[in-house]
Amino acid sequence: MASSASSQSSSASSQSADKYEGFDLLKCSTVQEGKKEAEVKLPLGYRFNPTEDEIVVYFLFNKIMDRAMPTYDLIKEVDVYEYDPHQLPNGDFKHNAGCNAAYYFANREPFDASEGKIIKTAANGGYWKVIDDEYEVLFKDSEVIVGFEAVMNFYEGKEPNGTKTPFVMNEYRLNPRVVPAHVLNDSIRNKIERYVVCRIINEEVSNQPVIDYKKESLELLLKYAAAGTVKDGEPK
Image (tube, rainbow, N blue to C red; front, side):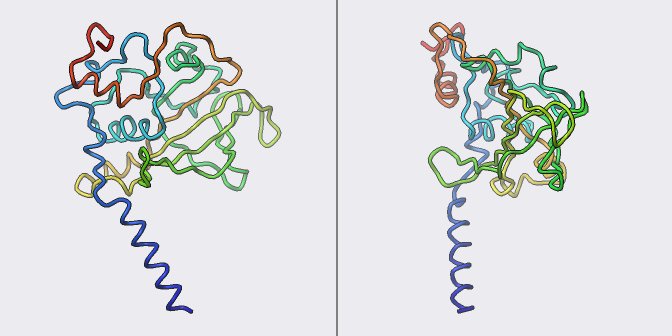
């Protein structure tokens, strides 16, 4: 029986390794050679609506590697755990289709498992509470796990009896396993451990109708830019 269990474990490990074989994160995350962030802007009439794997691959990984990102200044660098989300600028929430979500690069804060997966904030004594285990973020339709997502609710007051607010956070971190070995050094490893992208949604704000807005995938917009089919901020 022990031999059989060992064989099954070895087979599972081999299958896990196979799904990463041939996956090139550096190639997948390239925006456009020779382009800077500011030169690949979101076209007029389009809303910022990246998928979870696009957040991890195009933004978080490129941030960690100090490479060009697809759009300019739509994901700001803010230590969101230092703030009550009510204090975040309203203008940060205007770019997505529902005008109710903001995106930030932040330093990851470990939660206190002994207190029910709680992350305390520095402002007003509020706290974020993790509501479930992390989810895997898969690259497109593949089995390649490019990152992990934690979901949290914000509570006002002191734990564990705070008042739940309409703010929900999706925290995305990079899976270190997909980072090419030849680019890894102590600095990159530290950034992988430290950097996350936080999407904060105000569920109290109903989806506001946006006239003629377009919600193409970020990848399609990058193809427009690479092919030179974006003129005056709009795809031809």
